[in-house]
Image 1 (spheres, helix red, strand yellow):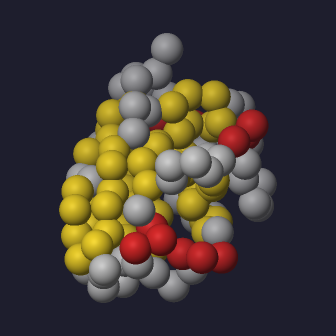
Image 2: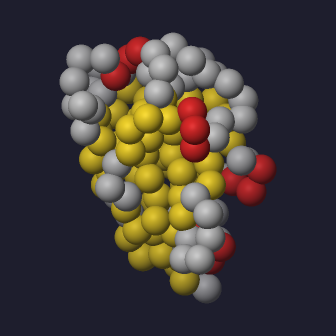
Amino acid sequence: QVQLVESGGGLVQAGGSLRLSCAASGPTFSMYTMGWFRQAPGKERESVAGINSSGRRTYYTDSVKGRFTISRDNAKNTVYLQMNSLKPEDTAVYYCARGAVAFYYRDPLGVTDFGSWGQGTQVAVSS
């Protein structure tokens, strides 16, 4: 069972930046699509961004396009989410996830496309 550990969350003022990281265990990281999701209080978990196994294809939900960038380093078993121009509505717990099937990718990606999840990291943006 893969383990995913997120880090980099915190409290930031509107307009600021944060970089989330997600470190994965095991030797098969480079075979799987990775994704970032978020869940705000009282709301459903939503897909934020996804990246295919090679890193050549990415997906973003409309509300973060132009502000967030997903990337991965397969040599370090790590996926990143660079978040710029943060807004109060970005406040949520952010989760890293690994695709359920090796080498599978589609656009857009949804919760059911992922089989392993991290514990989440809190991001809070003050106005």
